[in-house]
Image (tube, rainbow, N blue to C red; front, side, top):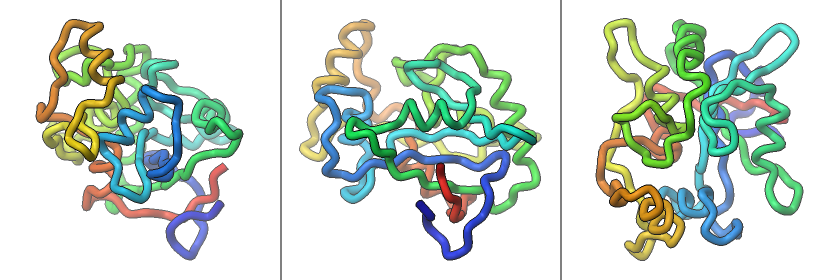
Length: 204
């Protein structure tokens, strides 16, 4: 599918791929994706994941943080398989690029420093584990240490102001209170950052 703008571009190193599902799409009950959708959905398209693209000579790689792989670098075909929906179709992929893209390759190299870390089920900035948008935020930093992407109070509640069962069970299991309103990031907010622009890229 061709997304966003009228002209079709090639994926570039440093592009961010946001994974979106319709607001009314039914995921398996109490799944991670469902909980993230409830918490961050915009009513039309729920962005549940963000990944970093690295375009090589023969292969396009994805660097991201997932429960399945932790922080990992794998071919883009693996990424597509991991996010195939229950009916065998693919979700919506929205590609965004830095408006000032001159440091894109360096940001991707930064992300490789985190490879091998576990997925952050605690959603905490104070441990070695990482979740998807945390990986992006910590990788896309300026030479003086500044962040391109802002942290905001995290929301784990659904539209009714309640915590989905998934979050209640997860944080009870690890013995931690749900970090509602603690500083953090999510794909939905990150996609709206003014440093990004949407580009039309055909995926897959």
